Length: 139
Image 1 (cartoon, rainbow, N blue to C red):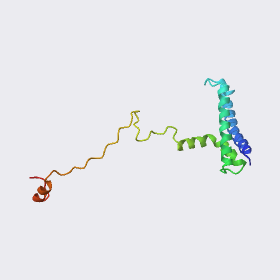
Image 2: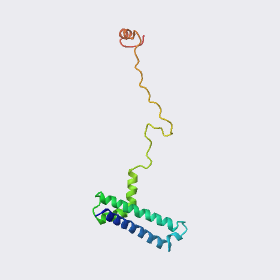
Image 3: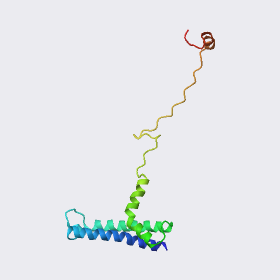
Image 4: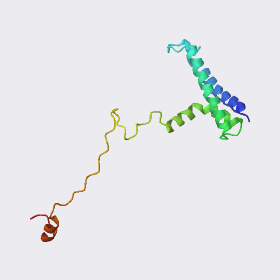
């Protein structure tokens, strides 16, 4: 199959879902869905359907050309499941990643790294006192 064929089957899958939802909305509202009190007119509805069909078509094309699906039924299924696929992919990729640990969340510049502690050298004559007391520092 070609990319265009995968796209067409994905488009049909999306159209099938949108058509069934639209049919249900007509029955539920006993008329056009935009004629109820929710304030959504026909233009936003049309735009949302076009977006949904485009996503289904694009995902079916991508799945087909990358050999994730092998035929019309697979492309149709991707078109039907497009919103769920996008939702699951979005869960895997955080859209607002947390800042790296070295950047404080307050926007302040990171603090300078602490210098390693300097080794403490024994005072002059400390070796002889330690030997005389058996290693005890108390005199």
